[in-house]
Image 1: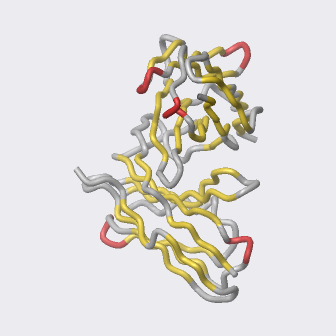
Image 2 (image 1 turned 180 degrees about the vertical axis):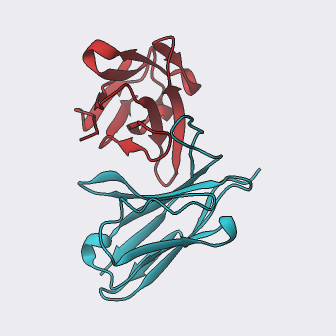
Length: 112
Length: 117
């Protein structure tokens, strides 16, 4: 079955520190991959997406993600975290252009 | 322009009652999706509408759940005889036409928080 796994439920980092959120997928073929962010009381906002080509993709708010086919991973990174980055982050995938399969999310806490 | 809007933002109901949740997609978006976000289950796909095609209902958890989309725009998700396990945030998203060979970004609404007592 198609699935997306985010192994870290909670992550705490200090402001200014680097961040990496893990995401692994299980699909028959390489899916389209996404990272979304959800702030309290807000809808989901797309940070970045990977369809094909360059395996390092840049997104909004200084985030980037690297697609690694050999590891079935699409980890999200940010070199220096800001307090406003505290939110829940979801990795998602689709194999056929419509419905998204989401991971269970990673709650990010930023310590000042 | 306006984003996806959903109403009500919060709904509290008693077990056994029916509820209707509304979604107004972005103007011109032909694809509309419903997802459910609940504790322990994460975000789950419920149903997908694309233009005049038959909807993909593969994610609906039971026959108590139904959805319709009138005039290719506004959608209503109906839950009949609500149960406590239906308590969740129901998210709606819309996009330009999507299909097997293409993908257009889904824009999400703020959600409706449903609490079943």
